[in-house]
Length: 158
Image (cartoon, rainbow, N blue to C red; front, side):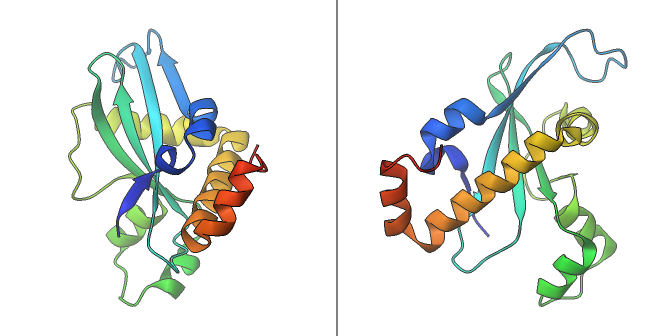
């Protein structure tokens, strides 16, 4: 299942609504002080409704990806009901997450960033709703590219 940056389809919205975080004097010392960007990626397969986001977490200091974190906001039954395979506890943990994305390169800060996403980023209810809204926009673009382009030109997405 390929994932594409939200920014590729909605650069104006992503420019205004991509989450960034500045970490200063982190008391546990696991995540160094710095600026981190959480670039959203969504599945571009037609007829998919996985309700998941991948975060490509970039450090401004290194200008590199530090972690790929996946998060699905539905419950276990939702993912089990859509799977053609029997899902192991490990599979479910990654589907629901947040979790480090299997098969993706992870930097040395990945475990600390996963904790940060779990404890801080996803604790923000308004941000969680923003992710869901972005997902719906993205899915609409995949399923109805012509209609979506017309809406975008009319600035209905704002």
